[in-house]
Amino acid sequence: MEPHTHPEYEQTFSRIATAMERVTEVLETHVRLNIETEARFNARFDKLTAHVEELAAHVDIIDLKLSEATDKLNGVIDLMDRHMREHGNN
Image 1 (cartoon, rainbow, N blue to C red):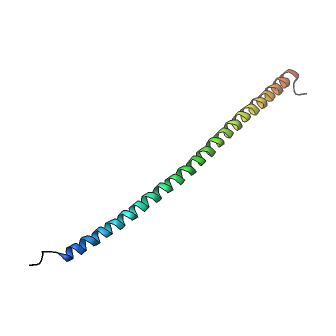
Image 2: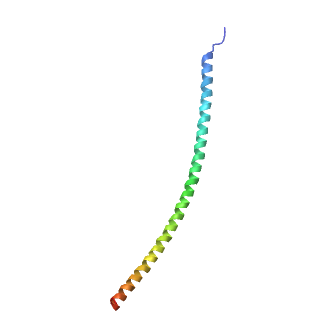
Image 3: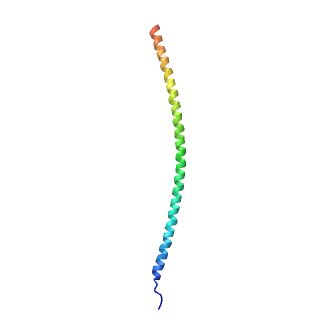
C-alpha cells in the first residue's frame, strides 16, 4: 500500500510559501524606502527650519532699525513743531 499524500496541496502550500516570501520582500523594500524618504524629508525640513530661523533673526533686526528710524523721524517732527511754535511761520 502506498503512503497517503496530497501532491496538489503540497504544491499549493509551496506556492503560497513562495508568494508570502515575495510579499515579505516587497514589504521590506517599501519599509526601507519609506525610512529613506523620511530621512531625506527630515534633513530638508531641518534645513528649512534653519532658514526660517535665520530669516526671523533678520526680520527682528529690520524691525529694530525701523523702530529706531521712526523714533528719529518723530524726534525731527517734534523739533520742527516746537521750532514753528516758538518762531512762527516766518
